[in-house]
Length: 140
Image 1: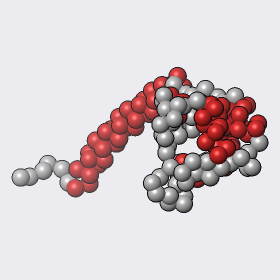
Image 2: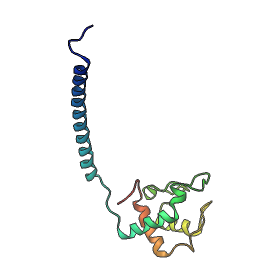
Image 3: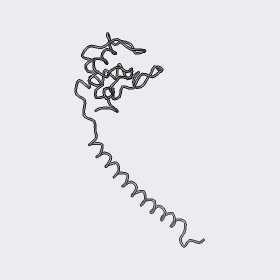
Image 4: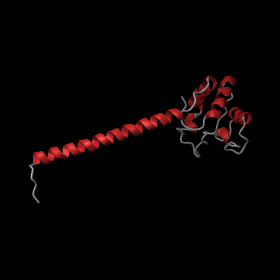
């Protein structure tokens, strides 16, 4: 097999072809990113109310280390609280109501300690408000 052009010319042709493919790929990628960003704007989660935002802070400080991260490697792992109030019952089988969640927080249950002396009534109200909207993923 013989070529009618030298190495330098062949390399230049290859670079031009590769640059054309890279340019088309970059344009396609930018188009997909723009479409995803536009779609993300329509599906963004609503901002939390001030009460829910306070509850999110209480959750981050007092609940997440066990119910999200299980930093203490508790076995069995504490239940996931995402969508807690979208279910009819709590993980222990009790009804998923504000009163029952407050009772569990105040008295403790199983390996979960009581938070009766660690949480004010305002913090309790805020935490329960946040748990109502804590479905999946972070909020604004």
